Image 1 (tube, rainbow, N blue to C red):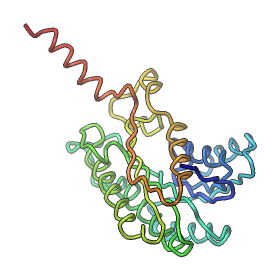
Image 2 (image 1 turned 135 degrees about the vertical axis):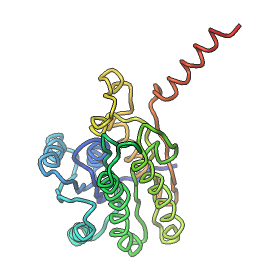
Image 3 (image 1 turned 90 degrees about the vertical axis):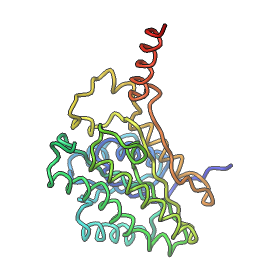
Image 4 (image 1 turned 30 degrees about the vertical axis):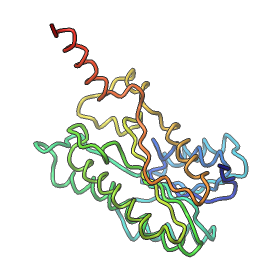
Length: 265
């Protein structure tokens, strides 16, 4: 299977200031793509853009579009500006997402529930909705929704709002393939387990530096995004799950099993 040359293609990355979004932006720019960085904080977007430019990635250009993906009118306006400037949009990476510290049923607030759903699910929907007409008109395109292990497995760790948002994202993602695949549009939900990104800072139980070092890293996810973008247009990876080899959930179960085995007669 021959991979595509991405030189000159256009990618729009939301949540591009940190974490998986920033990793995706760097990796796609390294492949020669024009990358548009979106996020709520201009300073972190500028830092990512400066890093990309400092590495002199071949023929890549970087532009910034400040955006709160929960603002549906702003999403439409940004998508229109990108398409007007470049005349096309080849890849959308919907990576904007949050979680809150007080996230479980006994302490999650109504306002925090709304914030998580508005950004993690509604925001991704607004972005997909904004780019689909262009991708259909141009005869193809790739949408990558950054979901989560929590989009496949219900867990107390991530809380009901984030879990519900990511389950919804996975269902939404596949509905794109069902309806837009006949026009050459492909959608992939990447479902990472623990990734060493700033979202971990909002965990109720702090994550140690030692544990973070064993996790999937943002650049790992960036390389996965680049691989998906390079696949031939006739290949659709509907969903991709990635986790650390040192999967802390599995480790806890394995250690419990080992302890029980030692106690068995």
